[in-house]
Length: 192
Image 1 (cartoon, helix red, strand yellow):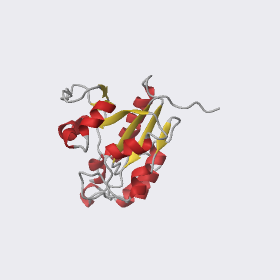
Image 2: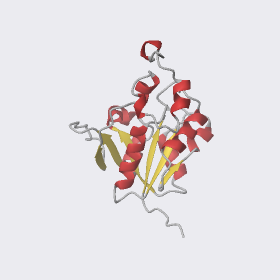
Image 3: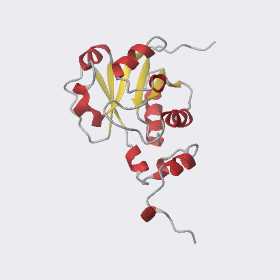
C-alpha cells in the first residue's frame, strides 16, 4: 500500500531549462522532516514574462527526467491551461489531490512577491520556503510564515541558455538542451 503524503510543497517555475540546481532544491525539500512530497509545476508561461525559450511540452519532459525521484510529482496543470497561470489558481487546483502547505520561492522573487495575484490570501494560507544562499539575508518581513532553505546553487537557467555552466545540466537532457540553446561561437571548443 502506498503511503499518502501528509504535507506537500509546491515548486513552480519556468524551468527553461531545468538544471541540477533545481534537482538539488527538490532533494533538500524532501530531506525536510515536514515535507513528504514535492509537486514541481513548470509554467506554460510565467505571468511576469512575455515568452519562454523552450516549448512548454519540452520543459515538462525535461522536468520529469531531471526531477524524477520518489516523493516527486511533476504536474502538467499549468501547461494544460495553455496560458499564463497565477500561483493562486494553481494552488487551488492542485490542492484537490495534494496536501500543499508550502510554497517554494527563490530569494530573488521576494522583491516582487507583493505583485503576485492574491498575495495576501497566499500569505495567510501557506508557509513560504525561501531558497537562499549562505550569507544572504533576504527581506522576509512581509511573509506571515516562512522557512529559509540555504543552498549553494551557483547556476541559473539564464546562464545555461547563454552557453555558460553547462556542467550543471543533467546528462539525461544535456544533448537536447545544447541543441536548443547552442553556445555562442566564442564559447565553443575547437575540434582538434
